[in-house]
Image 1 (cartoon, one colour):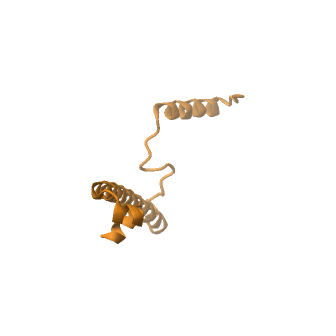
Image 2 (cartoon, rainbow, N blue to C red):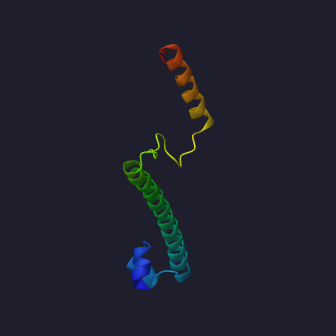
Image 3 (cartoon, one colour):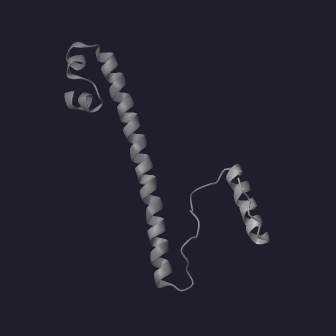
Length: 98
């Protein structure tokens, strides 16, 4: 248990001489953070796998294309508006000085 507490950031002095309830709180918070970190890493690895799969498919199949934009990113309304304005400006040859 001592190793887990130290991994969670509890000092040896607090572990041996401090309040055990505080140590348990610290361990539970650390465990929650680790699980969230593992979940994010798993999601990132899954998404990376999809991009690799699409890249391989684009190399092997002439009808398949690698995506030109991110698959999993959802732009904000402001970003959508800025992209729309940029596309319109590009279509009409307008340059803006912002």
